[in-house]
Image 1 (cartoon, rainbow, N blue to C red):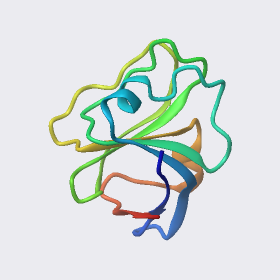
Image 2 (cartoon, rainbow, N blue to C red):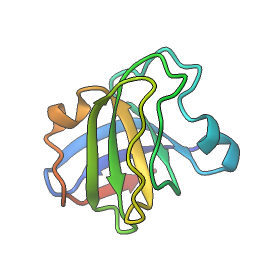
Image 3 (spheres, helix red, strand yellow):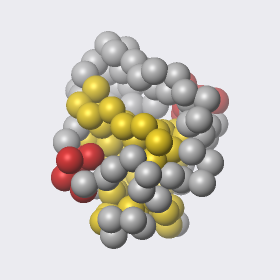
Length: 117
């Protein structure tokens, strides 16, 4: 699977430097299931996606919802296991990150993110 860096262009911060891209049906379906956690800098970019769930997960995550232009349109901080985000047709993809990462990086709705290979 492809691994990328995610940078907040607006806030000029690094969101993650080891973010795996889930773009096949299989990788989107299983996401982070079976993992025990995410290390600092890790994450999962699910594309396309209009929302996510944490059913079967063992740890909380932060979730950032992005539109087609990579603009932040929704955020869910510390989404605990066995919950789900709302579904939004404005979302084109989502970033799943270690819990607390949204606060650490200061990401805000409206920020523009950039993907680097």
